[in-house]
Image 1 (spheres, rainbow, N blue to C red):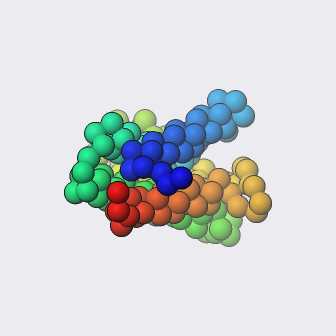
Image 2 (cartoon, rainbow, N blue to C red; image 1 turned 120 degrees about the horizontal axis):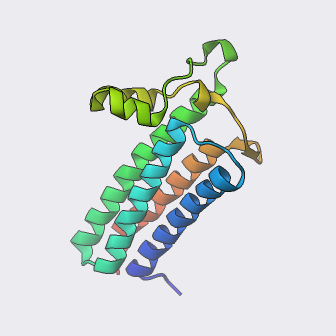
Length: 162
């Protein structure tokens, strides 16, 4: 049985929701405080889930479906880029890891938006710590895999016929 357009968007939404619930479990259940790049990745997962939920509710025709999917691909692409930057920071030798920076709240309260976003995306020493792995991949590496899957599902939404 083939999934309908609406069902596929719902699958994307529930997959993203599961990712964010898992992130909250690691934060509150396991006591793992997220670094700025982790929080950024969560926001992009949330953005993809919001696109998918709105698309599922709207259930648009072909052009609308493609617009929603392209928007979700854009969010997933940027989120995947942030994930890959995070993985790169984790792979740096200790002497090349950037110094720890200010907290997220402090950055947005005390710096202009552009500078705060630049600091956020640059990452810091907290982002270089690998505190969890599964099958040899760190959490940001798994999030990058998830973003790749989200991009693939949304590409399928664009190219498939009803």
